[in-house]
Length: 160
Image (cartoon, rainbow, N blue to C red; front, side):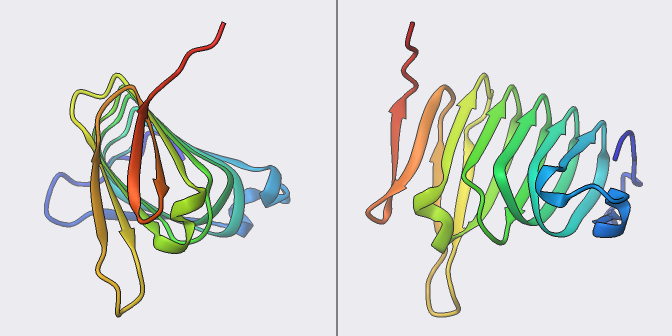
């Protein structure tokens, strides 16, 4: 999906990516690329895809089931991302005001990398009806994992 711009109003345009729109591509080999989108909500209505790349988008929401590799967000602003199933990595690079919503059952598997983000990233783990959501803030240039019921943040270590 590329260059879609919704109206700059209270209503967002809705874009749906379905299995049919992948045109015969195996979803486990499919990378969903969202480029230059503005003021819209994208629903990826495919059970499992390989990866989701979000680049140069503004004021967008993205909802998906599962991503085998994970999600990359680059040079984007005001992104709300919700993974309802499993995904293992979320790389956020040079992006501002990102909110990441993930299922609490996926929290222990998820690694979040941030780099060059002017504002901290907000992470919210959603539980069942009985559980309160867990909310945490991640500063830039850190790796964060959910360990023993808490966000554990360490500086990124560069080898070489």
